[in-house]
Image (cartoon, rainbow, N blue to C red; front, side):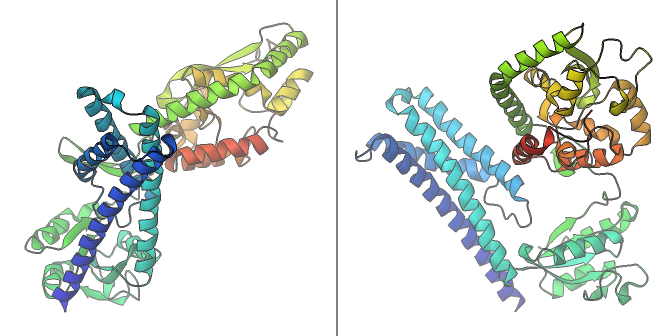
Length: 467
């Protein structure tokens, strides 16, 4: 029975791999053909364009496996698969473009066709991958394509692993039971509905007698010797062995596992702005900032005249703030207070009590004083979306008072942010504001930025907390 089940599972995985390969080729061809039809209406498909498709298909057999597009991705978030698919697709078409330059055939093809092929194919590829994930999730929720697993460990980490598996039936994992050396394990140490199978030393013997696809080891770092014993005892088995690192007691930020110099590296607290993410964010900021400045420049000119006529002094108020990696920069605002308003010293908050000019009160209340910060974005000093920056003197104070405060500086400071659209701005609870800032950093994506910008337009400018 065990060999039959394992064989069926392997056959299903192999069939799924080949179906995915076929679907990817179909997407490549459909996008190529559709783009040709749009550009060359009514013409029969040209032979050299067919050659281009054949070359692209041949390249895909090397590029896609290189980026592990056909590796089983059970439980991998779609955003992670999206990144992998995007990089593979861009690499494929970059290779095609370079090949056409090397062979001096680039002028033989329509650039519009090539661009449409790239864009349509990318969208279709993402849609096909999303459809596959949805179909697999439904099948797994119905008991098809399940993997059997055991958990080794009886700590809180093992309990959390078991709970997450039970709450995610779309992953298709069946927990057969658990092994533990802790006292009380037999009486439901992990869960009353999960069978206790024995001590950790019994794992290998159980795996050899029963069908198990995966062994998850969930032990604390203090049990390194036991972990090694379990791993060594499974050397004679073909079962997949996974280790859940005991890092959840730390304050995590974008945690992941990477490899540096052939060494596995657990990232506990890192910035999401690296690699392609950094490029996407930079392009997003510059393009949107340039468009917004082009639209609001007449309004900014009127506001500048209003500031100048309301009181003597400069139009812009420059204030030193702290942004990404603790770097200092001068943040721009339209001046809303007299030039000597801070002669008695710098104070945090208290905007209601500051002696703003009548015109200044208006632009502060409507957040129009913040508009010059789009210039900071254009200069690369800020982002449109991100945690609001603070003055260096207050950063020094708050980092010792508020847990995780400095982690907000793992991304560029922003004009608006997740905290602001949820009402945490001005003289509000700073601890709560930092919680929202860290949520944004943990969950960053271009789509989240767009959502925040959208909500800022409708409810982010005027606020009872803006003074």
